[in-house]
Length: 272
Image (cartoon, rainbow, N blue to C red; front, side):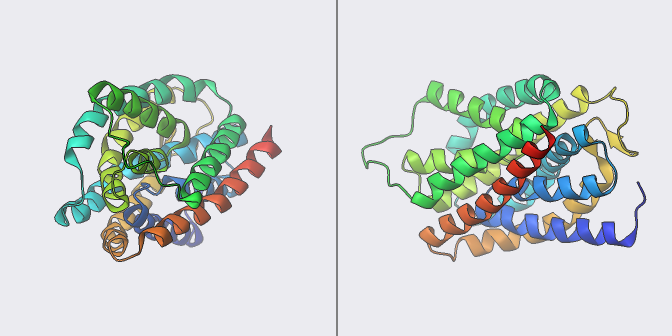
């Protein structure tokens, strides 16, 4: 794979856009990054069975850096619910390791693409409908949050996202305010990304026909360029999140996800 100027420009643009959206929507940028990274790797001759898997793994690795930048901006505004982060994180790490070290390596790339598309479409619909939870619904106890964290970590590991596509709807469902849910989701992106990235490195370590400069399923040049650009724009997205009205924030989130879900469904069906 040659590093021609166009490839560098594509990765820089992807990094700047996903960083902003990570800060704005608390989604870690993965939902946006995976489809575009799949296109970039496909056009560079990476084997079809590896493109989606490497896009997912590389996307998740960038979230390690993006989440730090994004959460600092949210924390300054006092929007992060650290009490929820502490109780959700152990389950997230457990679920993420199971997904990235076990299930991810066993599934075909086409199956992962279809799963990605269906789950993102479902998440977008939940956000678009903007259903209000009953005012009496409470945040679950420690055991409930451990279970919820495990599901968030596991699903994130399969689709390479920071978990915002599950954790934001979950938190709004239990009556956490949307801006706090987005900010807390950004904080949860760090343990999600760390656990899953370690799993992708281990599960893909001895694979044949990986492109040059790969560490397991992670494509290091993509990680370096995207991460260094996304940390610049994540704080700008976080700043914008506190100025937008709630309903518009949800609709923006949902509309972007629908488009990307459609592309990944097409990609998965074509390969299966």
